[in-house]
Length: 146
Image (cartoon, rainbow, N blue to C red; front, top):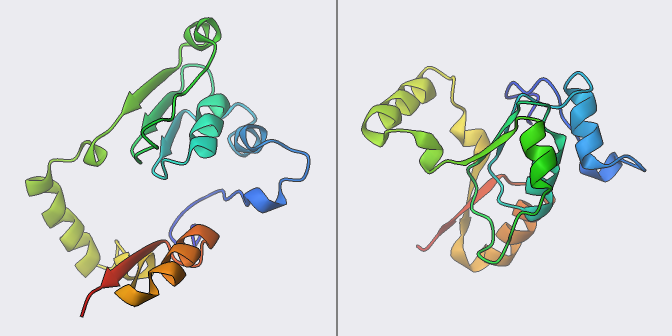
């Protein structure tokens, strides 16, 4: 689905073999790693891979909330010498009164296919919703209490 929505490169973590995720990310980005890496998952292994994969002078932006007890460890000298930076972003640094109307406009124009990103499910199917979210079947399950 990522390619269908415009991604130029996709990495299936289950098919890495002996290759590490940071190495696969670097390979997909000219062998140097991305200039900008944005994590929306909050999953510690993906955060670590994103930071490790950045190219020199790269910028890593954390959008997804990580677990409260997760600490990111890296060698500060190597990080500084490479000129990398890490930033946190709340709500994507968007200003809702301005950005929400734009998203609605993009949706109406067919440029923001939110219907492909969400799936409504009855609240009593929350275990199925969790399963689908974790296995990638559903990107964002939304539970309904009706």
